Length: 224
Ligand SMILES: C[S@@+](CC[C@H](N)C(=O)[O-])C[C@H]1O[C@@H](n2cnc3c(N)ncnc32)[C@H](O)[C@@H]1O
Image (spheres, rainbow, N blue to C red):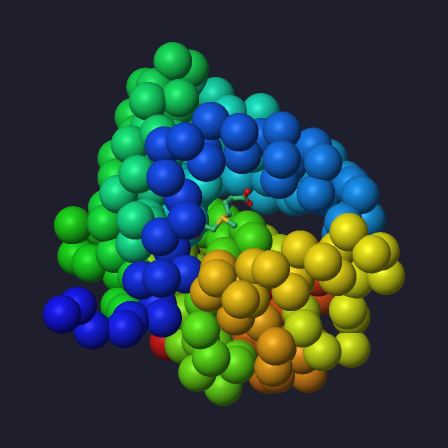
C-alpha cells in the first residue's frame, strides 16, 4: 500500500482537467472574490521582477508567465513536484518563449544540478501555502532557491497565511476549509513573523506586503 506523503498530496490536485479550468477558477474568481487580491497584483510582481534567466517554482497553469512581459528571448526553467503543471505550462509558454526547460523536483529539496544556477529571478507564487509544515520547516525552500539565484538576482512570490491574515470573505473561508481537508492547503500555522524569519535567514534584504488575504514578498542579496 502506498505510504501517506503530505508533500506529494499537496501537489497532486493539479491534474490536466483542473489545469484547464485553473485560470477561470483560481486566477479570475478565487483571487478576487475569495482572497480579495486581484491577479493583476501578482502579475505586477512578475512584470517588475522577471529577469532574463528565470526559475519558476510551482507554475500551475502558467497564467502569470504567459501574461507577463517575458520576451521571446527569455530563458525560463519550470520546477514542480508534479509533472502535469510542468508539461501544461511548457506547452503554453513555448508559443511565445523560445527557451523553456522543465525540472521535476520538490522545493523542499536542493534545486537539482540540471536546473543550473545564477538565475536573475525566481518566482514562487501561491506555492508555500500548499507545502506542509510551518515556516520553520518549509522555510528551507528559500535557502534552496537562494543557492541558485545570482548575487544581484531577486526572488518574488506570494502566499496565503493561515494565522493573522485569515480570509474575510465567506468564499475564502469555505475554500480554506475544503482545501485543507483534501491536503491542498497546509497553511494553518503559517504566520508573517515566521515567513519573515525564513526570508531573513536566506536573504540579506526582503520586503513583505499584504493585499486582502494574500501576502506578497520579494527578497534580494542571497546569503552565501
Ligand atoms: C496553487 S498552484 C500555484 C500555481 C501558480 N504558481 C499560481 O500562482 O497560480 C501550486 C503549484 O505548486 C506546485 N507544488 C506543490 N508542492 C510543491 C513542492 N513541494 N515543490 C514544487 N512544487 C510544488 C503544484 O504542483 C502547483 O503547480
